[in-house]
Length: 404
Ligand SMILES: [Zn+2]
Image (cartoon, rainbow, N blue to C red):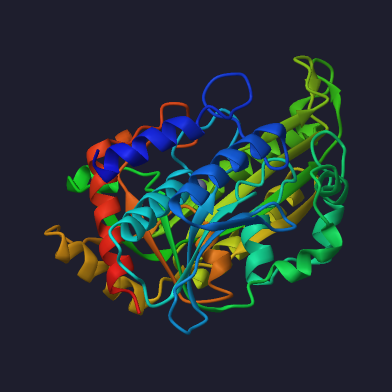
């Protein structure tokens, strides 16, 4: 069986570990997380790795070279999914390294360095509304205040870690102590570029930065029939005006995208003027300065609309992930590995955020993308061809052989 089919089979097996409902739902510190980790442990051990789980719930499989060195290459991605997600987002970046490394070991190829394959417990941030908990712990950027984050069910991260059998007080020790020389992540593209280019794989040269905000606008609720338009302080229509005006502004720029993904009006009744509005803004670009100037513009628009419509407002930043470049050393090595298997290197930026952004705080970082059907992701329809998995696996085997 070729590596693509082997990887495909293992991805199918991993996809059994899901909550009920459509697609894959495998959240951090749940029964499904435990079951998936048990399966991954089994196939990592079968591949010849030593396996352990750290105190944030990352499963780590280690290959030790017999050479006298503590140089370590880290490969990995996240085991968790969004609700009703797909089989490949995250999972691909755990399974392909296992398959490729197992191939090297079976073929008797001795690597000159150690390898760690990581299945990060949390990347999507669904349960605790904060992303990259696993890679933060490994990169040493996890801060203790995160332990107080509350889940949708009302439990704290600290308590959930304890219930999972982990020790939250020891998360500081998760930071990798080895001489980590690079982090490489394989991931589905989650966009349509590779499909349009008719390519199975692409090398990531940079990851877009993203800023997230929560906006609260307050006016005065009132009767939809009795309050004349000119006397209203309508939080709903004020928010709509902000969204349209800012979107018009962004559409005139290049290389930046803005999304208002959640909008809630209250009291939320057909015959009541909305007294309160709460909405989110997600803004992304490769250019951190462009994000900063656009956020200033956004605040200016909110303030202007609020003044005209007699509204109060609050704009609160909830997350900042700066854009970052991938390491040119890793890009060059990936290009060589792609050429070595007779394929064409193609470099492009990632529009989505990844664990690699966090891992850049620890070491050199690189990413390889694999084409996914229609660019669809975070959706049960996520689909990847086993032929593409074969090409990605071959590149990875070459990369492992050439890496130094
Ligand atoms: Zn992902």
